[in-house]
Length: 246
Image (cartoon, rainbow, N blue to C red; front, side, top):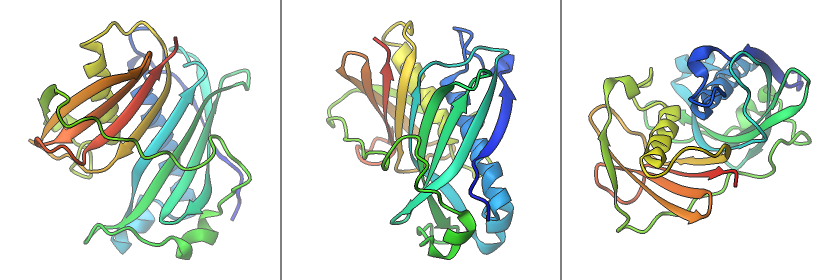
């Protein structure tokens, strides 16, 4: 099995650009995941191959760093590869290049393969040769860190999960949490600075009509810690840190 990075070239469409005319960070997340899904299929471990075995991939943690975001109409190339297997995690990295072949975005992601019947993580040794890990190629070293919890008394804004939040797996698509977090930040401060990095931990799924309480706190200037708490509970949900250029 080849261990060359998989590549996709995209011209940024109008619907993926935000108010500043650059690629929305949540659309970037969607493009990275689509490239990962397409590559997994080519490796024989994609949705169509795993579904008959009652298995599926879930994104557990993500870390993206943007040197700068491309503008609407610009062409980018996404490169992705499975980097290594660490315990139950399959680590997949990404590099995004602009039309001049300059690296503008780096990302690393930690994935789990779950059994659809009992939702238990599966050991990946059986698929290691097929996935063709390349530990000598690294975008961002190491696993994505476990993010700390905000204090329980931190107040937040509630929102109910609606039909438009739900994906084919009947739960909130993980890129939607990033939209929720950015909406929460925008309610408290002007979105005038460019996003430098995003870290996300996905701990528990949200489904239709669940209630999410979005809480946030500025850890240091430009570094905002957020949580989506499920149905009033303090633990679980989704955690994130979004850092803005200063």
